[in-house]
Image (cartoon, rainbow, N blue to C red; front, side, top):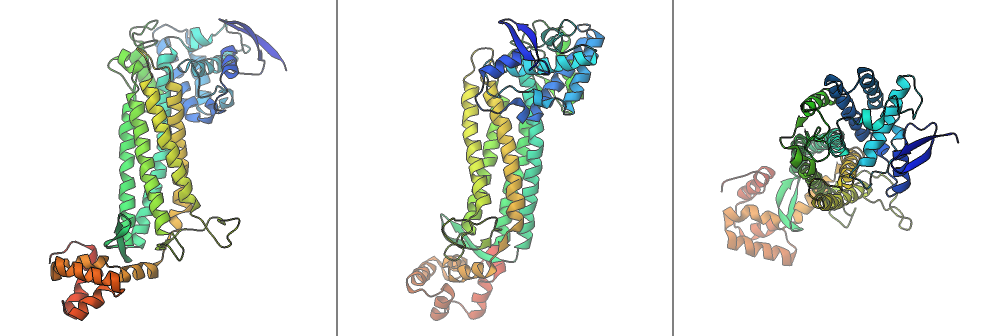
Length: 465
């Protein structure tokens, strides 16, 4: 393999000649082999890093801190990366020591070498354009990295929101399709009162629909950045006007409503927005897991369970039991939700573990938030397209459960009194007779009145005795 020699604080190392990264990236590769997940796994993070570097170059050019030809070359290199170029050169493991320095230097080196090529120089000829002096001008990892991470999370949230909207619409469609099907509602796994299957699915849809707004709220917090604070928020080595100008350029480059934090020292160490976003993901995961549990319960059987709905059969369910089909899609959604809930704890612990003016555990926070967003988006799309859209109602089973349930006695309480209703319910439970049969035997209501009270419209909507 052909190599070039690069030098840093610790000495010299050969770097593959064709690599667009440099010696500091290579050292990070050697040091951190923890997850096997490189930065390139999350293109949102690469694009966001390039956006930050482009904004910084423009601000430094405007302020005379960077020569125009260098700024233009850096800007052009960043534009290529934003469009997808050289993503395979972002090779550092997401989990790393150094509060993200390896990720920042991976970006600085790739951008520097790409900019050098645009200026007609070879890779590694840093005397013409330097990763630290030029690409990282007026920056520290401690403001560039978290700013890029915040943007990346906002970008990753968009496909997640689209997946939520798709699933919500599918649940709403099923609510309309099942609006006429009467069934028993249940509390504490026991028969409660009648409802329609449509009402059940409508509740699923409404419950899930609330989450898009929570994601938007969390993204607004993430759009407050500390770019320009450099090492600890004091802005050392940056022009006094740099922070405002760089953030304005970043808003233009990214298309996101980013704003400069009021206190950059506070913003450099504070992980509050990340914790909030993680909590939103956990809240969403909890709801999705509960939905998946309900779908598995409602479809249980097929003959000895509830069996009120049929899930699409996706694959054979057993290597020993012929004919068995498992609810594999909701099960996979459950497991994804559990992973996200666990990741939230990791984020919480990492956010708490910061000391003084910086949190060195940011890489773990970023890894978990990006991974959780990606996993949830994929799992929601799976649940939507491979399960919910194909759900069928078992109307006969819903009707049979309703007819045999003592839960309908609740609808009779305003008409025959609580004591009579309790007695009838107990008799139905011990004798096996239906509630309607026992009410007729005791002539507690006329046939006409009984039919009216037990009509679908009366049992599933508010009524006055």
